[in-house]
Length: 190
Image (tube, rainbow, N blue to C red; front, top):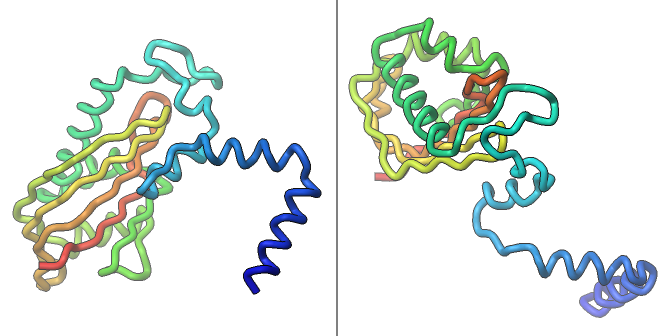
């Protein structure tokens, strides 16, 4: 069976001619990555990261913040998000969470869209404390990915959901404002 696969590969390369050598050369040039984020990043077109602070976006939208400024703003939004959950501030949560938001978590297999997330967060969650650690912010033009560990003391409908979670948040800058479009969280084993 392996020889058949090898023969198919050789035939494909012969049929493709010089195009195949170009594809193979490009694959060799790609940096080897170990994370999904890296794989996603390398799948983006080159112009997605070509934007520099102070330049106008190709679609005429708002100018991007310098990296340090954007990083600081995103980390502040992460804290505001959790502080808003802690005190039940629906207005702040509504400004942070995008209309097309999605939450993915093993504890909520059906997922949550914006409306379901806000209802769940404000009705069922009782967050008493939280702490972020090992947080990183990666910027890709108008998209940012914030990852880190979130240690929290929280009850959901009286059930203890306290623990340390690996969290990945995806943010989109729309018209100069960062909005969370996705959160994935997975509880680390004790």
